Each structure stands twice: as structure tokens, then as C-alpha cells.
Amino acid sequence: MAQYERNPPLNDADLLPDPLAQFERWLGDAGAAGVLEPAAMSLATVSAEGRPSLRIVLFKGLHDGGFTFYTNYHSRKGEELAARPEAALTFWWDRLERQVRIEGRVERVPRELSDHYFHTRPRGSQIGAYTSRQSRLLEKREELDARLAATEQRFTGQDIPLPDYWGGYRVVPETIEFWQGRANRVHDRLLYTRAGGNWRIQRLEP
Ligand SMILES: Cc1cc2nc3c(=O)[nH]c(=O)nc-3n(C[C@H](O)[C@H](O)[C@H](O)COP(=O)(O)O)c2cc1C
Image (cartoon, rainbow, N blue to C red; front, side, top):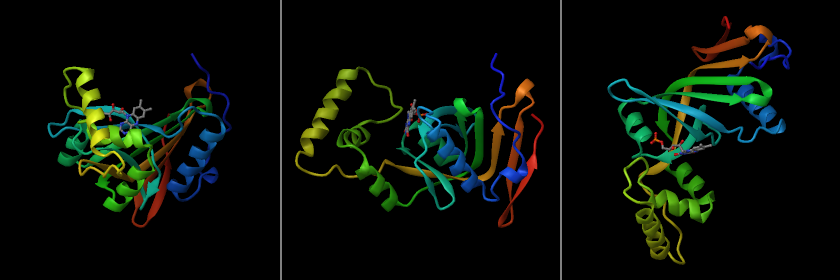
């Protein structure tokens, strides 16, 4: 059982008033500490019937006050977000004994932003995103490989266009909790909640 003894106490005074700036500071710390994939976050969505589902996606930056990620709009998560545009995110940086939890409503990012990001990706990833019908059943891997080859051939010498079924979302936070491990499981938890145009910071029991 790990004892979380690395961290000094986390106090309100250590936190920036803006949780997004505080998040960027912790994300930077995680990168500097050599966390393998500091941008990996768990994304929870809910079906129309209220059944939760969870998967990891990559955080791709803050945009207009929201946490962005990119995916297929027709995937399971995409369909769930179309029906219920709310989500929860969790980051866990083991080397720092830190967790961040975010909850909020979800919006698609502007098309221009998705288009820009899509074309920064390696061509192979663009072909993959164009071709994959994410979350659908696939009889055989070979069938997908053949479709990938067909996409490649179809766009020889041309840009891969951004498919209308692919792009970004942003999770606009209502709450953000910063959690830091402490000895004896008596961890520090500081919760930001939107209060008008500002943020209120409160401490939660571990
Ligand atoms: C480290 C890691 C990063 C991932 N990043 C993404 C991502 O940014 N976007 C994405 O659509 N899927 C990403 N995936 C795959 C998802 O976890 C998931 O398999 C996929 O999005 C389908 O989810 P869904 O069927 O619930 O829609 C990532 C998986 C891992 C393990």
C-alpha cells in the first residue's frame, strides 16, 4: 500500500484564484516530473438511460474556458454526448500523487479549430480518423486495413479532408477539484465551484 508522503500540505493560499491556471500549473509539474502521458484523462459520459461509461482520451488544451479533446462524433461517447451533453474528467499523475476532477457541460469546439488540429496530426492518423467508424462492430481487422488502404489511395497527392463526423469537444467546468495525497490517507482536497463570474474554493474531507 503506497503511503503518500511526498507532498507538503496543500492550502488555499497555494492555489491560484483561477482553477484553469492552477490546472495548467499542475499539468506542467506532471510533465516536468516525467509522467508518461500527463495529458491522458478519463472521460465519463452517460447514456440517455443514465448508464455511465468511461474511457481515456487525450487533453488537447484549454479553449474558451473548456478542456478540449478530439474524437469521432459518431462514437459511443459522441452519441452519449449528443443525448446528454455533460461529462466528468479525471487526471491522475502517480509520480506527483495528484488527481484533478472536472465536471461540466460539453460543447463542440468551432469547426475551424477541429480543422486546424486535424491537419496538425500525422497523415496516418488523419487517414485513421477518416476511415474508422469508431465504436462500431468490426468483423475482421483485415476489413479495416483494406478500407485504410482505400482511403490512402483515394487521397493520393491530396490533403485528407476533415470528416464531418470527427472533431473536438470542450468540457466547460462547473467544478474542479485538486486532490493531493497525504500520509495516512488524510489527503488534501480543494474544490472550486463557479460562483457568478468567480470561483469559490472549499475544502472537502478526504
Ligand atoms: C492513452 C490513451 C489515449 C487515448 N486518446 C484518445 C483520444 O484523444 N480520442 C479518442 O477518440 N480516443 C482516444 N483513446 C481511445 C479511447 O479510450 C476509446 O477506446 C475510444 O475513444 C472509443 O471510445 P467510445 O467507444 O466510448 O466512444 C485513447 C486511449 C488511450 C489508452
